[in-house]
Length: 136
Image (cartoon, rainbow, N blue to C red; front, top):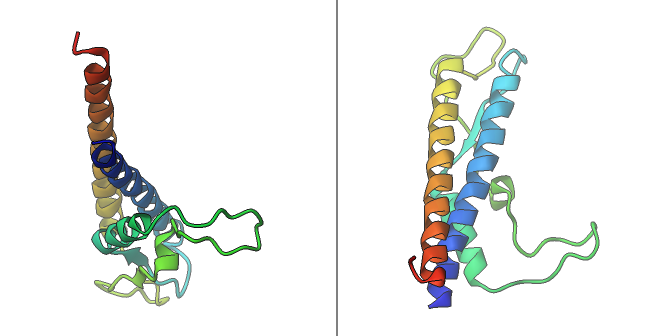
């Protein structure tokens, strides 16, 4: 039973980690909107989450005791080969592919999904706490 609870909480934790990474990627795109030649990037959340879950199912892995050691589990979508160039709707004259409307929409969508995952996690933990206390 604890394995099922742990798997569910691991799923939510990986989801939050990837949502935070996606917010960083989108913020980077927005920050570079005026950089000549910058190409907007993004990653597929679904496949990155599947990779995270697959890696966590393989066990705990090795502890990284030195900064020069390679980590056994990557928490960054870019290291999983997930970062891809976003296709441009229309390139600007300076060859920049950032479309601010697309970035704003992606940022808002990601923020809403991040918040809903936090709400779901909070309610899940509340339910577990009620079960532990005896459902007062």
